[in-house]
Amino acid sequence: MELNSDFSERVLVHSDQLEWQASPMTGVDRRMLDRIGNEVARATTIVRFAPGSHFSAHTHTGGEEFIVLDGVFQDEHGDFPQGTYVRNPPTSQHTPGSEPGCTIFVKLWQFDMEDRTQFRKTMAEELAEKVDGVATAMLHEDARETVTYHHLDAGTTFETTQSGGSELLVIDGKVEESGESLRKNAWLRLPDGAPLKIKAGPNGAKIWMKTGHLHFAKPPEV
Image (spheres, rainbow, N blue to C red):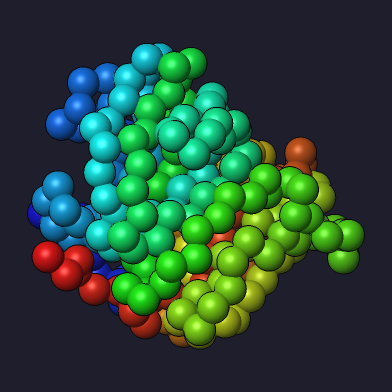
């Protein structure tokens, strides 16, 4: 399966307008944003766990990173409430589920295969002092990518020209980009060389962002 797999193109998905699709596990549904592959895939997805649902134990051969958008994600490593950012590198294992139910934004098979750094962060706790109406949290940075979280005051303009492409998810509020309105759960991916410029709406915005990573985009090593 290939979905939004041309990384030279701008892609905008208003994910709340997508139908939920059943996964192989009962009670776990998903909205696919981009994908190369079938059940083993380089993928960006919003996943919804119904209360009491679980995946079977598995190893993340290609690594996994995710944000808890609502509810509480759970595995044998603990409880991960809304606003948690998690990186589970290649070879990591867990048995995910959620007794109360949750929704996560997850990216699979997008790690350096030698990466073994595993961690969790509460994104809001990582925010630095605001500069020109923007508070920024550095979530992760390496030679391949930079992952950040931002709080934008109402009407604030934010832009970046970093190489390697950019990607963002609107966690809350609204932003304007290229004349389009991106509300909560909207996902935008811009190719290498395309500058990102957004303006926060009247109630501000909270966004997750990744830059530099599209140089390394490729199918999973199955």
